[in-house]
Length: 350
Ligand SMILES: *Cc1c(COP(=O)(O)O)cnc(C)c1O
Image 1 (tube, helix red, strand yellow):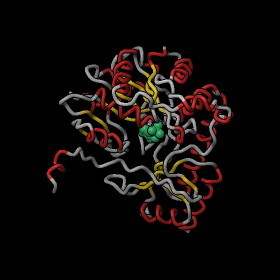
Image 2 (spheres, helix red, strand yellow; image 1 turned 120 degrees about the horizontal axis):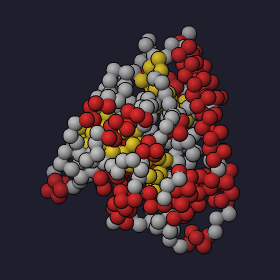
Image 3 (cartoon, rainbow, N blue to C red; image 1 turned 90 degrees about the horizontal axis):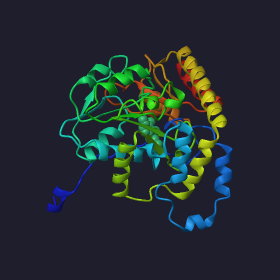
Image 4 (cartoon, protein in one colour; image 1 turned 90 degrees about the vertical axis):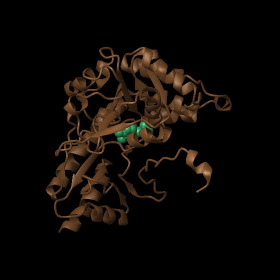
């Protein structure tokens, strides 16, 4: 080993779902099967090239303003970034700086562990129960911060807001981050608690319900003080994170509430239909409140089904890791895509 090796910051990276370049039925990374709001395309097509020549507004002011108005908060309560992964990573860097471990569930978004390792943040995983539910009492002990998604991923389970509030209220000495990547498919957001708790940050994304994973837009909403700390960290890292096209497109997406709400309804309807169909052919599915279904079959190995689907051009997500080795996570696509998936699986089960 070269002696410089010992001082290199090494980390085991997050492994994203595959992005195959050929045409497949892609149900593996929770993208939205429908296009973004029509205004997004119009705005991008008519974008002024002179704005491309210049650096973008480092504050992404237009997008911050659109989000503030949509969520009825002040502009100094909104932070935007390059997807919620960027926002979450900034939050880890800014707020998780204690000697005490941060807490997150054992079955959850696997990026949390990677950021904790990268930034040398001690952490402790709190096991979800046998039904994959987060046990709120586990978070009532002393810690250096708390983060969990609601609904949780990859289970899709939603925690009622009063339980989320209990966790926030019991941890007022540290920062609590609620990762609401899937909240639009679920239920009440913790955003309504922002004014009540000074330690709360809510993070959301344009990647799922707003059909804009390719544009990379995420945001955090909190109180002005915590947003200021986040901006200070961001401006010490990279001032121009949001590119001009993303800012313009993001503003248009936020404007079109009707298109957004109709799209979310369509996916919820397909999800609930697909879940019944999967159960009809013998799968057991968790009560998903997201745009994916976490499913296991008592008689077939998840790995075998995953590989069978893949060989036929249908991509789903499978980890094979501890506690979830029998589960596949299936993104809710269009009704036609879900029909193709179910008929293939049913064929195997005959
Ligand atoms: C998809 C996802 C994100 C990240 O989404 P971005 O595309 O980076 O906005 C964050 N958290 C969870 C739980 C997710 O599933």
